[in-house]
Length: 231
Ligand code: CA
Image (spheres, rainbow, N blue to C red):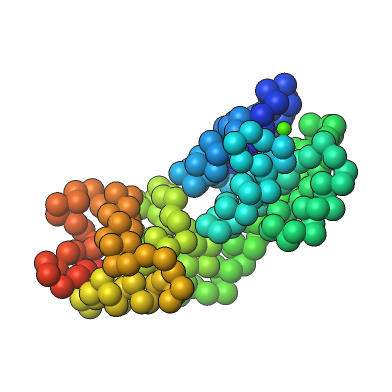
């Protein structure tokens, strides 16, 4: 079942959208501020986001920009003002579609369906083209094309850098990399941060893929040196 996140502060509209999407067999979560929506989007593997423009805490422009840095799922933006739609287009925020309020809920459902099936086609076409873009090691599956990670069949949400770091290590198994090497490989020179960033990211990756952090199945700490992906 596809999971959809609605980020909308007007509860009447959010409820209506949720009802219609649920009637079409989608699983729906609602967040009523931009910040809550952004956090939920990063934490959970949603398939599509319906994003209102005028939101408390952080507006839809900013939320869209932040989501796009890390997540590549369809985003449908909605706004009460026609002018905003031109602005969204002009800014090139990476939204996939735009709707002006008021719209009929069935129109929303139709667009959600269209975007989800287009996205599925893109993802599966990519997979067929590049079978070797899937890395499978024991219960871990990394889909490089779709940039998705599964552990024992369950998808785990990964940020861009976490994904790049895990993929790099998994593609170079049994090789010990120092934190400095990993930082240089994954973060570009202009990045703010230092080798502590690597430690933080390794910790986050382990929380998602390891059953027992003290006894890792995948990423091993080589004390005083760095990390190694176990074969
Ligand atoms: Ca609003």
